[in-house]
Amino acid sequence: MKPLILITNDDGIASRGLLHLASIAQEYGEVIVMAPDHNASGVSTSITSTRPLRVNTISQSESYSVYSCDGTPADCVKMGIEHFCPRTPDLVLSGINYGSNASINVIYSGTIGAVLEACLNGFPAIGFSLLNHNPAADFDACTPTIRHILSHVLQHPLPDFTALNVNIPRLPANEIKGIRICRQARAAWKDSLEKRIDPIGRPYWWLTGKFVCDNPPVDSDQYLLAQGFATVVPIRPDFTTSQSLDSFKNLEQ
Image (spheres, rainbow, N blue to C red):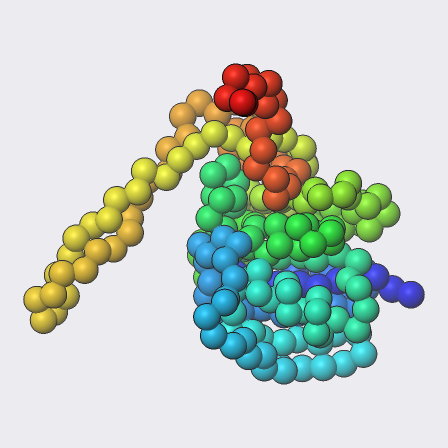
């Protein structure tokens, strides 16, 4: 039996990145797409709890079905697994995202939020992002990297409670130097809520910001992406700083 692959994203059901990822995944198994019916970027792992969710069937076949949901990426994972997958999925994919989800972006990303939701519930999951926000982004350049990673993960299952965050540089496929396993760089968005006035004189605030990552370590995603490598950071939905547990023992009573 072919693997069953569930795919979602945060850019919405009409995203070219989503469709490209689905087309690659069909080379490896049966595919169910369940993606937001709107752009849900930046919603992280949020779920919908104050209203019902609705699903629209876009297309159905024995090996490839597409649905949209009016919820978040994490909602889409829950919905797809519980109600629309004919059996337990072998792999959950999210993306291909427009723009980086390296470094601190992993905290805010709806793309990675879906990955963490799947991982939290015991499903192997991978998020893919391309460092290009252009609507005409060349997703073909991602294909060799994605194929290599999918082939490997389907043959060598991920460790329990561990997912992969994959970022691909904005380069032609033949200029991507390879794939590197690395760690997340320490960085931050220096946010600013800019006050503006609408046409009828009412104030509103618009989120702006600057990404700051000074001198990233050579074994980090930010550094390696800048060198032309695709990066893979193993992640998990457990925020415990295990190495610090002993240092806080003096808090115990």
